Image 1 (cartoon, rainbow, N blue to C red):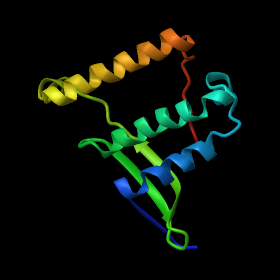
Image 2 (tube, one colour):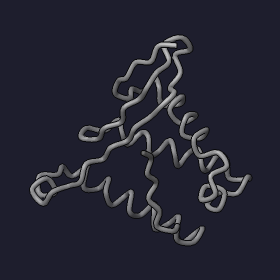
Image 3 (cartoon, one colour):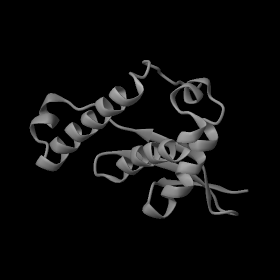
Image 4 (cartoon, rainbow, N blue to C red):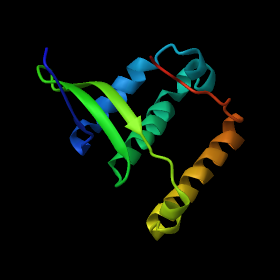
Length: 122
């Protein structure tokens, strides 16, 4: 098994979502947030998050097994926005930030606020 690392491309989005689904399968917070009947919804939320990595300025690295051409690891990095960067945002980036905020508030309204969680791996 040979592993290569590269930036996320459209070709690997579905495989990356599968990897994240597998990583959080049975996770207590995940079980609490999503009921079994919400599998499509959970997958859509994860795909939305991963697709944000395709936008300029975002960084999603994937590890690909060259034998099966499947994503076996994923790393998501969204750098903090400085005041200078915030002032130089395009209208699309500004609206995208509000869209994300609105979606989060809608989910909070529908399902209750999610607990603040930080997931760390050493």
